[in-house]
Length: 278
Image 1: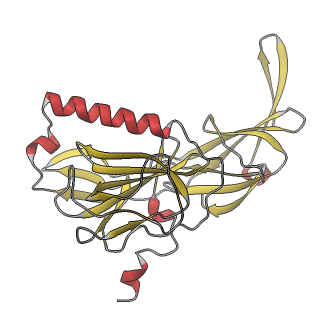
Image 2 (image 1 turned 180 degrees about the horizontal axis):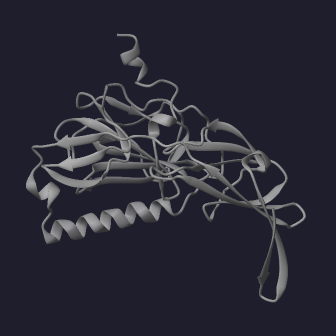
């Protein structure tokens, strides 16, 4: 359906279309809550997903993430003639677990004013890092599992901490002995390595490209430095229980821009390979 929009005195033309007319083909992922969607773009100068402009590599590859509670993805793109088009895609819904975690120190659930100020500063640093993607290269899918161990926490679950409801869990938790190696799940650049965040303890962030980033939390050791480029499978740290943790585990979170996505959607197997062969 053709729509006419009056803007700053000029008559502009946009078109509303269905998913089959999107200016790209899917190369990885699916239209589902928490999923990454990798695409190959054809005949489009610009593409916006939910008003966020896509980064596109020199071969026309790009990607975007779908949030936990998304129901529709809205797209806008400009073709090679400069015309703008609009489209929407419905998103498959998921159900999420409710997870009760008890035995946490009270200050980890209800921090005092000084701790709260430190937590807010930590959160700002993470948000600022996510807002400045550095790599324009397309990541390689699927990713590797970054560590071996039992899956003890999943994406999207509602967290009840010491009986108090909190925000959903936006990562995958891998329970493993302290000191278990953590490997880079894909090539990337280390954009943050922090020795002591209040809630997450020793923390690493990696930029995998095109706005896709990983965060690794609760580490006992960090083996990389900010600015360092690492290869898929390279040692980056070790499992620990620093920050808000009741036992040793790796929390692996993934974001596209500020959209929290499910790290388990990036790997080829439902659990780390070491568990599959037991």
